[in-house]
Length: 103
Image (cartoon, rainbow, N blue to C red; front, side, top):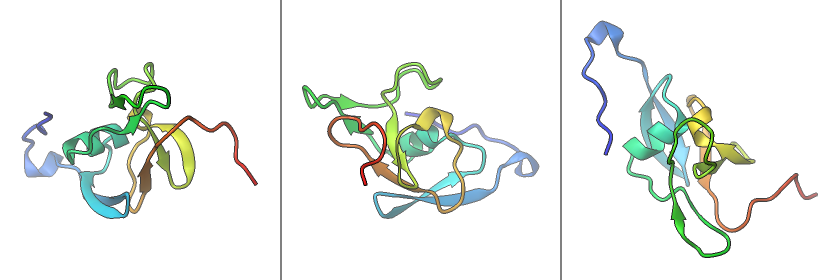
């Protein structure tokens, strides 16, 4: 689907690793989480709570909310607006969005 641009070695960003559903996923510093997941073949990102329809990033700019994931325990994060960082823990969402945290 997506192919990274070929850059000279001096312009390439540092390779890092994030964890998605407990498995390591390689990516590059500066990528958004949505791009990292798409490059790793992670699709769909979630399913709608009413119909169960599979969803994945559509706009890649924070408008559509189809790329929601859980990041380091924080639910409902728009992956297209989150920059990856080494060791980030990502979980894919199932069911309806939850507002706030339950105690």
